[in-house]
Length: 148
Image (cartoon, rainbow, N blue to C red; front, top):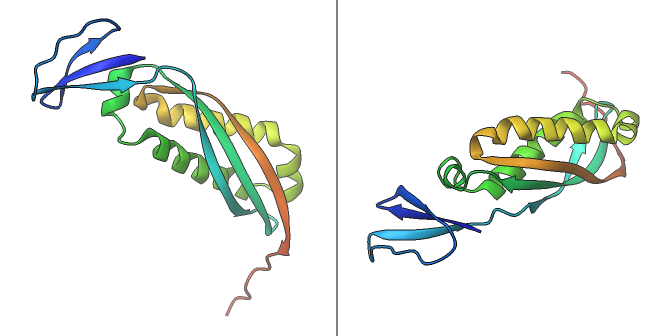
């Protein structure tokens, strides 16, 4: 666990374990967990290329690399990572048919990890792995609306 000492909303110093002196009312300490953490992406209904509704959820494992940048570059990393994963899952599955989605799970996982790695590079967090946990097909087929 790393701690960052802030003075008037600016980084003052990194406070390692042990005794750390801070100025009351002006300084504050923010704890940053440096261990690997897990974010669960909630299930969402997606439409594949052949208009089949699929329900997909995922999980993202990440680790904070730089505690200072992790506090300044993004406001809420969990929400940002979840939203980014949901958006990219929608794009990845929307470009494939149902058969391709069910067969190419490893390719979807590696593409999702690559996209998350590029996007979170500035946030001082490294996604270790991303896994598409469950993809279940619903019984409905979506037919396109006729053109008017």
